[in-house]
Length: 336
Ligand SMILES: [Zn+2]
Image (cartoon, rainbow, N blue to C red; front, side):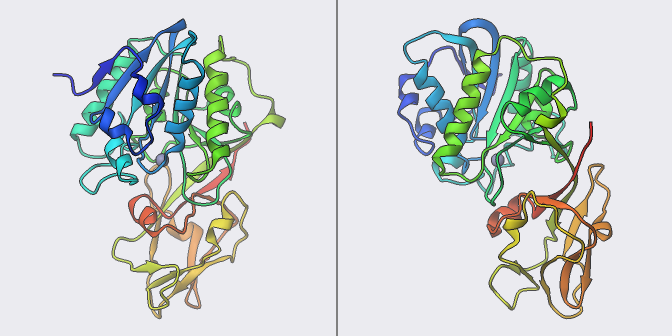
């Protein structure tokens, strides 16, 4: 039996719903297929993380634009974790992360992973044009696109959003990595939630993509793209009590951390203070899952320091996000 609900029309209520109310229209994972002039559909997934409303608002703006006219290209829309969105949460405690359970995931099989697998199978049969998954992040980050395959079409699609492009293969189980197996696929990172320019930027991008007749196979000119490769994902060890303001915590993080996102940070930079005789409170893993903590970090005089020049991303002051997702990613510039 199918776990995914599919409809082939645009429910008019979707045009006036909010990220928090859309759950009442679509309580279950739903695919909406809308026909346009060019038949190969553009796949757009929104609200995989319930507290990242920009995806939904940009999509809604696109649908409003074409409310009374034909779509230039068919669209398939996936409304992700509407339940978490109704509460303004990334996910519920009893749910897996909706952007870690797509085919390729390392998490145990779940109802959600079966849903995502079914969606990929449904979309594979439709000869997709491209796939776009839209997110916000909580720290101060510029807008950028992520890809999981180094291929000209993927780079073209990414650089249409921003000159800053991040290539990664871990974490596993993300939407864009699953779709990268069947069509050009990107994840958009649209800055913090609640900024109208983030919504506008994502909308302009969707509007450009829906009008594309093809995606170029030519390389993106080197001067038009800055591409970084994720070299490590950093997590705070589960048992560590950390904070940005409680001086009694085992790890007291620096409040200026998020200013370091997408900036090359020199060796010796302090990230926080640790208590006397503390062992390393964080773990960095490279893209093969190997522990590389010592390569990047050390403890010197009760401070957690960087060992080498690196560029972090996704640093945030939100302690819950740090727990549920990670502390940060470390990146290095790539030359194609
Ligand atoms: Zn997200």
